[in-house]
Length: 121
Image (cartoon, rainbow, N blue to C red; front, side, top):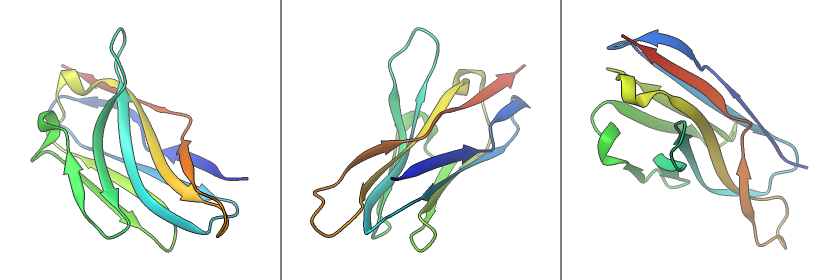
């Protein structure tokens, strides 16, 4: 059984910074990619950033230059450093990892429980 535990959300003023982390635990054979999504009230969940096991990253246009995703493959942990936060970054942030728990497992997406990020003026 794989579990993801997120931490680091909270309340921050516009222009401030926060770092989110998400650690996977359980039986893990391999990881293909790790990422962060967010969902604001009344909006669909959207991809914020993703990093592959090889280190390739991609970002939503709205966060490029402000957010940085990084990962620790050995610890199966993903981080999201968020700088210059804006009001529109307010959302629940979810980590997402594509994992295989054994060699014969084709793999699937796993999701964190979500952490609230609120940016105030």
